[in-house]
Structures are given as C-alpha cells and as structure tokens.
Length: 162
Ligand code: RP5
Image (cartoon, rainbow, N blue to C red; front, top):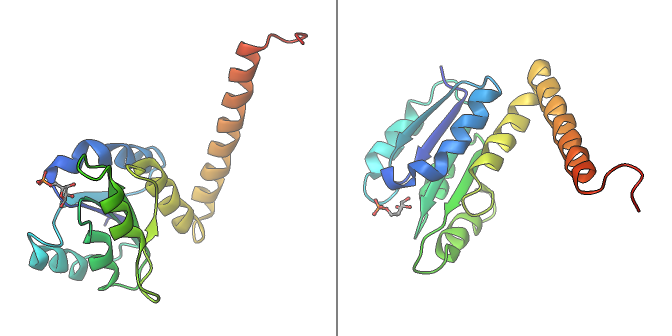
C-alpha cells in the first residue's frame, strides 16, 4: 500500500510532478500517483482520500486556481504538501497564493513553484520520524550533497589556488 499519495490536477502537470516520483522511488518509499481535480472531478478527489488506506502523506500538484491541496487538506488530518504549478498567465502566482494561503487549522505545506523534488524530500522527512532506516538514508543524502558542493568548489578552484 502506498505511503505517499500524489495527486495532480491535470495530466498536463505530469512532467512537473515526475521528479517527485523519482526522488520517492530512489528513497524506497512506496507511492502512487493519479490525476484528479478539485474543480473538474471533486467526487473523484473525495474518493481518493476516502480510499487512502494507510497512506501517511498526500502530495498535491495543481496550477491556476490551485485548490487541490486545500481541498484534500480539508478532508484529512494527515499532512498535505502542495506543489503550486507554474502557469503562463499570472506567472504561477495564482497557483502559489491559492496553495499557500490556507486558513488557520487546515495547513498545506507549500513548496516552491514546480518544487516537486522538495515535496518528495519533505514527505520523506515526515515519514522518517517513524522510520530509522529512512532517517539514515536522508542523512546520507545530505552528506552526498555536501560532498558534491565540495567537489564543485574544487573544480572551480584547484587546491592550493588563491
Ligand atoms: C489545473 O489547471 C491543473 O493542475 C493544471 O495545472 C492547470 C491546467 O489544466 P489543463 O487545462 O491543462 O488540464 O487544474
């Protein structure tokens, strides 16, 4: 059963959401991904939440008047992470504000515009609170990032240089 349920508002969001799936898969976190819209298919969205089983975290990606994450958060007390999807007309500000400006009591942890990778990392950090092995993987990943920065710095500035 999926620990993380990813819902995107439209099939057109798939390319933006894909890196989220990649990070979760890399970390060995079971997840499922589907399409459902807060506006176009509200009943389907409600059904997905009702049938979420043991899923611990929802990740919702949507653009424009992006109510998907909020609509899911309204119907569950499990953590909901929102990915506002960039759209041309208002430069993504519509989706960003729609996702981030939730009323007190119904939080949506909003990542950056198109921030699919960080949605996955945040979901992993939530799950790692109850999973020692996952917590270790996250620490290892941080060490790897540090090493990559060192490597990049070394490439630009050979050892012994000014
Ligand atoms: C939102 O409207 C979707 O999440 C998508 O980002 C945007 C456009 O949807 P389509 O018209 O491409 O289906 O609901």
